Image (tube, rainbow, N blue to C red):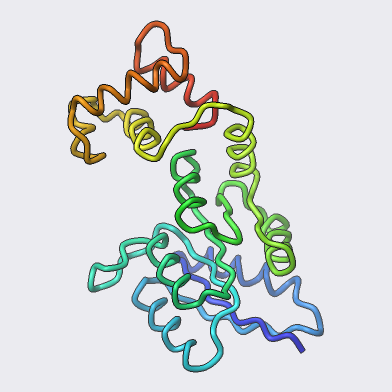
Amino acid sequence: MQNIKMLMIDDHPLIIEGYQNTILSVKTHKQEFDIDIASTCDTALEYIHNSLNNKPYDILFVDIKIPPSSDGRITSGEDLAKYARKLLPDAKIIILTMYNESYRIHNILKNLNPEGLLIKSDLTSNELASAFLNILENPPYYSSTVNNFLRKTITTDIFVDEKNRKILHLLSQGVKTKNLAEHVGLSLSAVEKRKKQLKELFSVEDGQDETLLKEARNKGFL
C-alpha cells in the first residue's frame, strides 16, 4: 500500500475542497491519501515541523498569496515553499497561483524550481488531476500559461537578467522611471542605463517606454 502524505495550503476553503475532491477522485485501491489543510503560514509551519517527527510530507500544495506568519518571517507562499524545501528536501512542491505575469512565473521557476507550477485560471478538475498524476510519477508539470511563457523565452535570443526583468515588470505596473531606483536597489543613472540597454535589446527605435513594453510582451518577458 502506497501512503501519500499531503499538505494543502490555501486560505479559501472552497478552493481547498475542490483540490481535495479532485485528488481523491484519482486515488487507486493501492493508495492511501493522508491530507492536512492549512489556511495560514503559522498553521502550515506547525504541520511541517510536526511532520518531521512522524512521516514527512510527500507533496505540498502551496498558494502564493496566503496570510503571513505572525513573526513576519514568512510573508507569502513563496517564502513558505522555500522554507519547506529546506526542511523537506524530498517533498514535491506544487505552486498554485493567480499571478500569471511572466516576471512572476520566471521568479517562481528560478527561486523555487517547483515540481508543479499551476496558474489557477488554467485549472479545471481534469487539469489538476493530470498534474497530480504527472507530478507523482514524472515531475515537473506546468500548466498552459507557464508552458507558453517557457516556449516564448526559449525561442528568443534576448537575455534579460533579474534586475532588467524587474524594471520591465515595474514599468508595466505604471511605476515612473524616477521611482524605479528605490524598487530595484540601483541609482537613477544605473536604471536609465539599463532602460537604454533594454531598448537596444528589443530594437525599440522610437525610444518610448510603451514600445519597449509592447516588444517585451511579444517576446514573453511580460
